[in-house]
Image 1 (cartoon, helix red, strand yellow):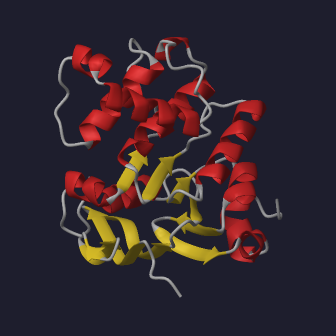
Image 2 (image 1 turned 30 degrees about the vertical axis):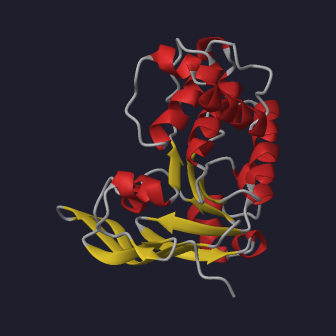
Image 3 (image 1 turned 180 degrees about the vertical axis):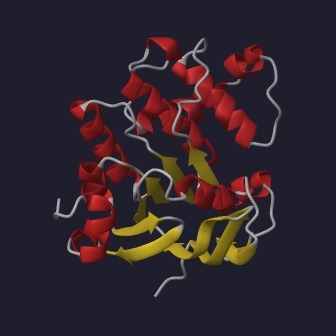
Length: 250
């Protein structure tokens, strides 16, 4: 059986008297979509902050791609192949879609952001950026300003930017936030297609999307993982339904 791509063990994070992460264990296998769900205030953001390096756990270990990364900074984890998208889109709205991805490619190559003109002249960067746009279904939108893209397209663009470094694992923070039904369905299909490229840890409140996409689901409540298993196991777990899913199977 393959080793987990990401493995967190016995993570604890306290803020004063508040235990935000309470002895949490979590793993993501290669090419797996693992969803992390829970009510607001469950500690999902705090947990992900520890996985990415934004926060240091008070106790426990995090291994990624075969290495102990518990004390590694964010940039070191990125170089190992960990990429994150955020709940609020972080695209550069006054630049084109292609420019956004080209700048992300440049940054992942280890360069600081140089003059935009350099990016626009570098055929290698632009070819790789175009490949990223194609991967997320925006191949024909490269010359469109990011501000002119729909909300769903901006989320697709953000994923193209995250893919610029050819990550082993994507941490996706509510990629369906603010989307209508059709946009959410397109995002589900996009993420399902990307599964062959990298593993994913998905934080999402859209339960239809979660149950359509996830291979496994972990449920977090008050900082503690109360259940982890297949979608069917989670759907039929009485404790999960009582704590989060409203008392009835979705």
